[in-house]
Length: 486
Image (cartoon, rainbow, N blue to C red; front, top):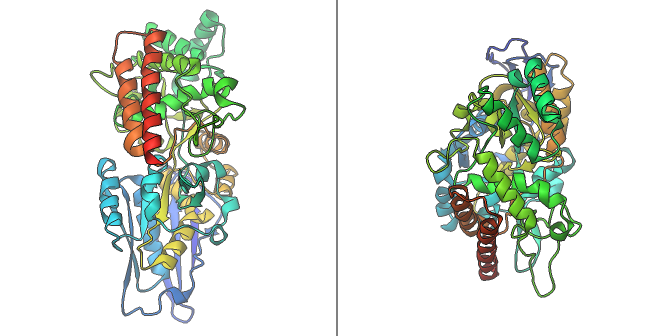
């Protein structure tokens, strides 16, 4: 089957699907038109052999489970196309709210049920679902077309006892944590001249070399009543803090050889919130944030939060950040949130030129009775053409390098979209300011760290001694949790 795609130059979402079934060839041709731009004609072809489904009189339902949202809608959209290729196969995407999906998945997996074939999960929850997923053979996928830094953080199951890694899932899109900003504000030359005269630095977010620059911009814009808030940053105690803190901390970790020990990305699985090497007598690296670098980062984080609603009253989170964006110059966020924000949004790396990843994955259940078909569908989702649909129709960023290259080379792409996709592609390949995703991360490390940091964020103190006390307590709890998991 070939799926030919042409993308119109209008920004109005319109999709015209024309299906022609050729009786002799049995070929399904679907022509899709996407909004905003025009691209060259491409085709999406699944490599699934007809032997996967041998009895069309007994329909097969391939079930994908994940959290609700735009990405799940894309998976279902592509599932419908996949089903048209394979008579007798139906792809069904089951979704739950983000706060519930993991417990719903685990209850089925722990029962060794075959109800779900493909399992959706986040980078930090990889170790929870990992024991129930089938190890993937790299040779079955075009790994060279996938952005390695995105695959690494969440794609591998790390066994704390053996120290071995297993590929358990692959990312189906690129989501990184960086800086998004309102182009209208930063394209204002009058504002730029006023800021540069007062602070003696460039106003453009693309030029910020440290977090002090962000705080200067926050002070300038709020004190001149240009925006109500400064750059927004997540401070939600349930999960957001574990995303936001590493984003800030990365700047200090990269520049402190005492904690990174010559490994600026940390050890895979542990990453920057642990030291870059294992100390003698330990089978795992020690936490790195209970250090001068961590104290500086925590105080900086609190200063950033001071330019937004008080977290003791309203916590900025993945869900409500878009509604506050219009009252701010920008935000530190995951690129998966951009599609929910109105206005012309441009992107920049985190100050100093780095990023954090937080991509979502799909793995195959060990208990699926359709493992081969599930693998073929996963390959189908990762094809460059399917990845282009992800961007053009759903405004999510691809994981395929070829798809990125094709989109960037599209001369009819609006300026702001071209800038977005170019910056994401550049930053995604070196997004390593990551929180850990070792086995106890989701259940133990995240809650203990978030609760303690939230205590500091809602206190009246910016004292470095108190900051160190908070971080020392968090580090102590992390060590105990890891030791009990080995």
